[in-house]
Image 1 (cartoon, rainbow, N blue to C red):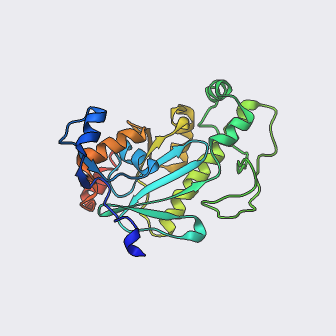
Image 2: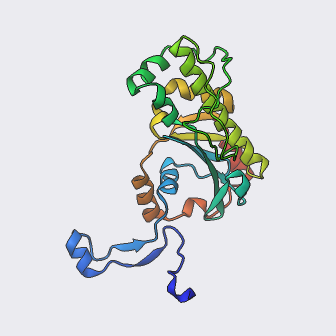
Image 3: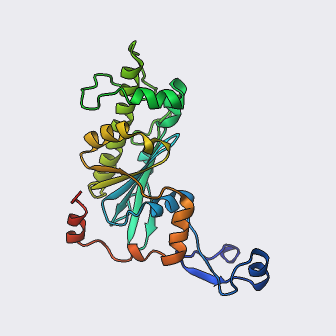
Length: 252
């Protein structure tokens, strides 16, 4: 039975040369090598350039996805936490059901842009929300019956949006804290991918809550990460980050 299964390859590892007829069909050099790939989310992480223990990537799409480089695997199914191996490091993470889909329930893209510009991110936010599109949460709280909390809604749309953005930022912070509690390193730097990465006000809110530098990933396309993987494999992850390298990553 085991012989029926394909062999497991390290991402970026050369599998074989391309078949001559395939090379001809697609106009590729016959010296082209076929390399093992990876998942789209990991490819997007590779595209960000993060490569040191403690560096993380938050994807602000329809949901909220966190990925943090760790020297040890972090797996805790009851918390919705899992790890993928990357060379000598591990990519630990979890995904929350909160995110952009909740924002789109209340505002159009144009409204999100115009209302965000009116938010003062230095002002305190008194609203205590847990934005979800429907009951059920995976991470950092794993509860299929967890109820959304988006009330009371203030008269001001600006204030309401501020409450939603602050709540998602708080959930992101709790997610990284949960990973640290389970044995992952303290997050030292966060790169952001996804549609929400373009909201500079939200970035400021998140940076204040996380307490570390938050920046837009230089490259966010998974295809770019796949190309990097084919070019250099996992060479950036084959040596565990030394303490001095980790310390240098804190110089923002």
